[in-house]
Image (tube, one colour):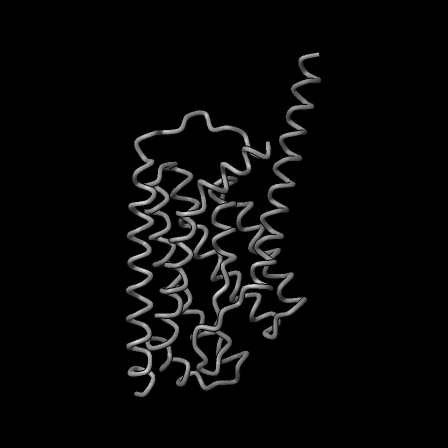
Length: 233
C-alpha cells in the first residue's frame, strides 16, 4: 500500500513539474511575442524582451536542463511564428538566453542563497555581453548582408551597451521576482515547500535589487549620452 501511495505521490509531483514548466515556457513565448521594446535602430533588429527573466526563474526552481529546454522551445516557436531572421535568429536567441541563464542557474544550484543568485547573475551579465559581441561579429553579417567591417565598428557603440543594459535589467527583475513567483507557485500547490528558509537573507533581497536598479539606471543614462557620440564616429 505504501509503495502505491509513494508511486502516486511521485507521479503527481512529476505532473505538477511538467505543468509548471509548460507554464513557464508559455509565459516566455508570450513575453517575447507581446513585449518587444526597440532600444536603438542601427539598421539591425535589436529589441528588448523579458523572456530571460522568466527562464532564469524557472532555472532557479528546477535546474539548468529544464531552463535550457525552455530556451530551445521558445526560440523555435519564435522562429516559426513571428521571427524575421529565420534560423540565424533562432541561433542568436539560443546563444543569448543560454549565456544569461546557465551561469546564474549553475551557481545558484551550488549556493542556494541570495548571494549565490547575485553572484550567478553577475556572471550571467558578463558572459552574455562577451558571447553576444563574439556571435554578433560572426552571425550578423550573414543574415543582414552588412559588411563585417561595419558590424565590427558597431560592437562597442551599439552591441556592447545594448547587451549590457538588457542583461542587467534581466538580472534586476530576476532578483525582484524570484521569491514572489516561488511563493505564488507554492500557494497554488505547484511547488513544494522548501526544507529550510534562511531568515538572514531577507534584507539582502531589496538591498541587492536596489544595487542592480542603480546600475541599470546608470547604464541607461550613460548609454543615452554616449550612443550618439560613439555612433557618429
